[in-house]
Image (tube, rainbow, N blue to C red; front, side, top):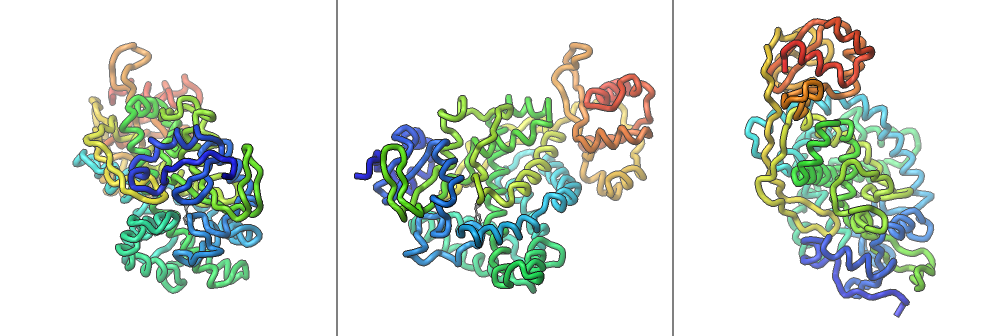
Length: 502
Ligand code: 8QM
């Protein structure tokens, strides 16, 4: 009909959504562009075409909605987002403003607190050991940091998750999944809309900063309200599933967990790879602003095109062994955060949340054992996890002496009351190798992680303090350290070893 292969699969059918990865090969292999009769849309599922379409915002526009509904003909589910569902020049004005509000410097300043919260959460989870990585980590962690970042009012924050679920369902058709979601989320939608108003936002948060931009004339107050809504729409469900998916990936691939614990600097790559592998956001639509000659056919002007981001991220034309979760691979070019001018505004929030959680896990957890199969929630856009039951096995095995608790130093170095530090159980992370490379024997052999920590220790030639899973160690500067030159990862294990701590 239009020169493209036609497929009769329905990408919003409950069978399809239950395991989209089963159908991706068929979508990719049919051709660079396919026609989906079921929804009357064109679709792309190969990496090259998906990435090119995301990049070409002039041809594949967002202003008519990035869901199935065409805003030029249908009433949007909610007033359109001023970031996601608009095109330049309006997009560039709002995005520029939001880029400033979400600056990396501000985020970095908050990292010590985010790290402490992640350490405390993981320590608490280790008390029982058996957890649901969705509720107990995926939801608990973002809810403990993100609403405060925005400066959201305290009461009702639990509404954020059902609200997000509905937003993502609304990019699909008005199927049973969406209708039931809307019915369940009525109160959540009202709460979120109200929470975006200036009088409900706390000072200093990102929400209030958007209104302050409005005060400077960068946008209108009404636009500010809508922009704050974007934080709440895009910032919660995505990171909830992103973190749960990360834990799932590591639980299902224990070799990758061992690799990560042997070299915690791989944490950043591990998170990117989890996004490529897990596909939190499966799909988005664009609409063609002109007729497009492509792949031997023609997409008429004004057509909806469904982009399978998650299928592109596992396209064997682009990735070696694409279904493998491989934290050492080069993930650059993955479209898990999108690509081009609309690429995720909050990606550094997601990365820093993941970094804090991963570092806490690496420091305190020896093993993440799946205790039952994961289950998913059907969602029209998200690969949404329902439950990820795992058992966390504490890193332990320390067998040396426990020294005096370094009270003052804990306060000074970490801004913590010692009592608090003791509760956290671990501040400085140590990890274990299976074997001691020096002695060639099986032994617990810790390495200190965290660049800030190396720096701290290198500067302070005083006592060293270690807080390891509810035990604290301290010892004085060892002249032996000088033999190694600048302190690096290999030095502290030797020190700890020499002091009989491990
Ligand atoms: C998805 O409301 C918004 O601006 C918005 C909602 C959802 C997203 C992005 C923006 C991509 C995470």
